[in-house]
Image 1 (cartoon, rainbow, N blue to C red):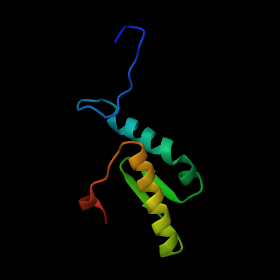
Image 2 (image 1 turned 180 degrees about the vertical axis):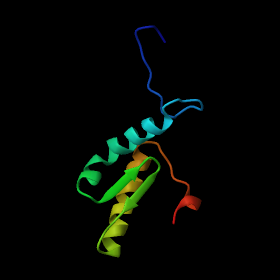
Image 3 (image 1 turned 120 degrees about the horizontal axis):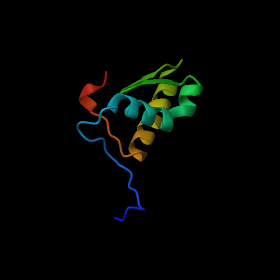
Length: 81
């Protein structure tokens, strides 16, 4: 890679000093419209969904999971409640 090229990290490396801020920016970036409409609240590694119906809840969760996968992130099922 020459000095004129740049690369974009796809994963956060250990020792990243602004890890929480960086991850929050990623979450805000791919879920901005869902945050603005009040469908979700994203805080660092937590995504909270508030809906009137179970069907609406399931639709939003599916959309959030789709966006997470599209951005090469993943979830740990054992951490979900």
